[in-house]
Structure formats: C-alpha cells, structure tokens
Length: 394
Image 1 (cartoon, rainbow, N blue to C red):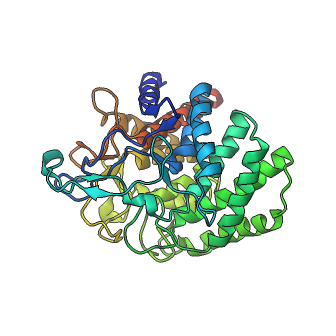
Image 2 (image 1 turned 90 degrees about the vertical axis):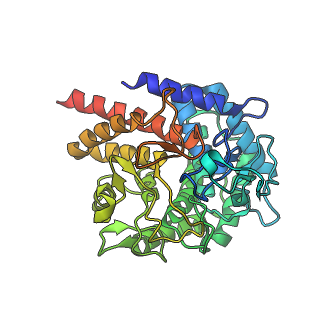
C-alpha cells in the first residue's frame, strides 16, 4: 500500500551503508540542531548497536539478505572481538569498527543557522546504556530465525555476554536517550534487559545449545518483568513511566514494549499508556498535530538543556503500537492509518526523514536518520498486514 515510500526508505538505508565493512551509520551528518539556535547538536556518523535488531528485522523480512549478512557480519565481529575487560560492549562504532570516538567542539565554526556548538565525535560512546544488550540479542535471535543459523562461537560469546549482564542487571544507566545527567533505572532499559535474557533463553531452546546458567538467566528475566510491572508503572497516572526515579514523567520509548513482545498490545496497562501518550502535551500527553515527543524536557532533566522537536521514530513507533492494538480494537487501527498518512506529509521532497520535526513542520536534527526510516518501514509493513487482515474479516 505504501510501496513507494518504503522503497525510498530502503534506498536511503542502502545509501547509509559503508559497503567495505557492512556498517550502517545512524545519519551521514553532524551537528544539525534539534532546536534551531539550541545546544542539542550531535555527530551521528557512526554505527550504533541499538539499531541492530531493527535493521536485521527489516532487511531480512523484505528480502535484502546480502545486506543483512554484511551488516550482521559487522555486528558479530564487534560482538566477539570488541568487548571490554569487564565483558561489556561499546554502544557504537566507527564504520571501520573502531571504538575511540572522542567528542570535541569546533568553536571557530557556526553551525546550521548559527546553532552552536558544532560537535564532532560523540561523548555517548563512553556511556553505559544497558538497553543495547536487548537490541543485540534480539538481532541475533532474529538472524537465527530469518537468516542463517547462529554458529557455535557466537553462542559461546552470547553465554559470556549474558553472564556479564547478570552482574550489571540492577545498575542504573543512561538508556536510549543518552542522557548526560544522573543515571537512572529507565523503564526502556529494563524492558530491553528483559529482552536480553528472553532471547538468550529462546535461542538456547530453539537450537538446543548447552546453557549452564539457564536457571540464573530465567530468574533474572522473571525478576525484571515483575519489577517493571511494579516500579515502572504508575497506578495513579495509569501509565508506564520514564524511570523508577522519575515516577510522574511519561516517555514514548515505552511504545517499544509490545513491539518486542514484552507485553500484549491489548493489556489494559499498555492501552492506558497508549491513550495517555495520545493526549496533547497540555493534557499530560506527548502527541501534538499527529507528532510524538520523547518526553517533556521541562519535567525531565536529561543534563543537556534546551528543547527538542517531535521524534520521527517515536511517531512511527506509536503508529506500530496502535496497529498491534488495532488487531483487538479497530479504532486504534483507523487512527494508526491516519497518523501514518499524516506523518508521511512531513517528509521532504525526497521522502527523507530527519531525527525530529519542529512544531512548525520543519525537519530538525541529523538527516536522513536510519532509525526514523527503519521505524517507518516497520510501521508500514505491520500496518499493511493488519489492514489486509481487517479487510479479509469484514
């Protein structure tokens, strides 16, 4: 149904790929501001581990096996060879697989429309962002399912990694939004840590791999789930929250939950959260003019300052979450189609999406952004399947 825009997005992903290594960069640009004249100006010319599961899913499901193999070879090599002395994995790499990515500012330059500072390199490379283990394990699991069977050496590395994650599973981190303030127990990271153990256990069972620490992985997975339901959900707000510390802050990253099968899309707790996110910001929600914000920057201090726009990726995540909820409640499917069509109108003349969109409709942040286009393709793929299902039933 949206074949042309999906094809354009796939072409953009192809153009973001460095063919000699298979790496896919988050964006080909740096320091394009998230707020004109603001300070949220970052360098995205690197390959994030976080993108791996979304990338593998899209490439394999749409038949781009050679690209999926090349990208997975890049990720697998980093996974096996680039872990630190403690067993942890860097969150990002250069296109050549290097991890030394110091951040500095080019004070002699004005950025786009006078926005400063102009940054190259990325300080987030040294962050602790524990959600990456969930995305990595989901990628390995999906590749084993839709691509090639995972080899023994990779399984050995998986076992070592999950045993390492057991040692940090209770620690706070900086999570998907790469906050530069206080570490917290972000609900998104907790969900992705659940994914880490869940996919490890599933992979062991599916392939009959030996799993000496199975009992500890299982205990950790179940403990995280109960903990998220207890500490990551505010019963008064009737919504999942940003972190165990920020108990009144709504965060659209929680929309990932049904997409990774952490929770059913028709579970009342998730549906309540969905309804809350769909409210406008002045009523406690995160959606304005059909666009979704990450969180309220005035309520949540991320250590950066300044404002940002609505997030393209989060808007597509909301579309996909409503699509999945729409299987059980048709009103969400209708709304998902309308929101998706509305979102497509914000692309430029080349069907490109940057990281964010301003209230004025202007694109903000580095562009084109891989994550935005991955989320677009996934939303379109699932929306098309769901719409066909409804057509077949009625």
